[in-house]
Length: 246
Image (cartoon, rainbow, N blue to C red):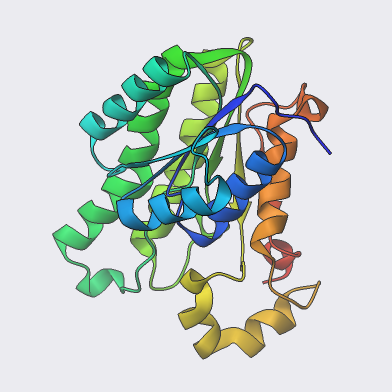
C-alpha cells in the first residue's frame, strides 16, 4: 500500500513477535531495515530470512537499557546509510509480579528496557532523522489502564505515552512522533495470560479474538506514511475494543 523505497527504518526488539511483523511490513514496502535486539543471534537469523543478500536488512545486537549500545547503533546507521527516516521502539519485557513482592531488580530491569531504552534510542536517533521522518513508540493498553501483576510494566508504558507526546512537541514540525498501544496480540508474550484468563478476556473483547501481529505492523506503517502526515503526539489503540469494555 505504501512505497518506502529509499527509506530507512531502525526497530528495536526486532526479534519479538510484534516487531518481527513491523520489520517484515516495512521491508516488503521497500525500506532498508536496521534490526536490533538483545538476542543478536536470533535477530541475525531473522534478518537473513528477510534479506539473504544483506543489502537492505542488517541485524545488530542492542541492549535497549544501554545508552552506549544506542549510540553505537546510531553510529553504524550514520556510516552505512547516512540518515534515518523511521524509528520504532519495540523492545520490551513483560513479567508477572505482584507489587508487594516485587524486588528492586525486577523494577529496575523493567524500567531500564521499557522506559530508559525508549529514551536512549530516541535520543541517539534524533540527529539522524530526515525531515518528514516519523517515530512510533510501542506502548501498551496497560499504560492507560494498569495491569494486575504487571505494575512495573504498566508504569513504564504509561511513561512512554507521556514521553511520546513530549518528543512530538520537541521534534515538530520536522518529525512526527506517535505511539501505538496494543492489547491482546497473538504472540508468545501473552500466552501465559491467555492460559489463565483467555476465555474471560476474549468474552470482554468486542471483536471476540486476539489481534494479529500483522495488524499492529499495518498501523505502524500507516503512522509512518504520508497518509498520517497531519498526525503527531497521538496514540492508536489496537485491542479489538477491549480498552473500553474490559
